[in-house]
Length: 268
Image (cartoon, rainbow, N blue to C red; front, side, top):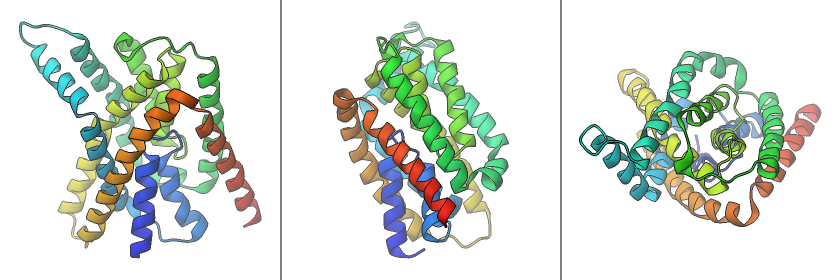
């Protein structure tokens, strides 16, 4: 990979990881549309780890409160709102980790292509629009229950199976349909991304270290740093945008991207 490819792909991942427009789709598209060499799993993991660091730092207070309450819940303190939220994040993570691991080979062979991305970009963009317009959106993040958390977790599996769905997009959509307000749906989506990205990153990092293949660690570090900076910036402004404008700008973007991609594929 050239330096310009590293920079562009890392910034794309960072800016799109937490937007409901699919970072995986945007990372795959350059190889499909521009003819760039596919960056591969190692680079994907590196830039995702940069995004993970961004969400950990941005939500450091919430993460610390949840962790302390979760550990304290095993003692005399018992369950609190934060400890229950910790359990819900764990519960929501299980489907994606288990099913994602079992189906990773299928995704790599059959789902990483532009036709799938174009289709899922449009379909789940329309579903996001429906949730944004029709859902009640009256509940806060602390009004979640275990059933809702599990449903959001299973929705995350769809994103693992089909690039273009958007992990953040489908989990926010499900959260909205279950009655969460926009800020709560977004925050729960961000928080539940932490264990998923950490699990995937740890697995593929172990594979890289234990393999005999040559790894360009400088390229991976550069991608991680750029992804961190762009993801942190994205989170900050995204939470402000959805409060004022809702999900409409991202729905429009998804529809334009999907239609444009179909046109390109038919004429290519």
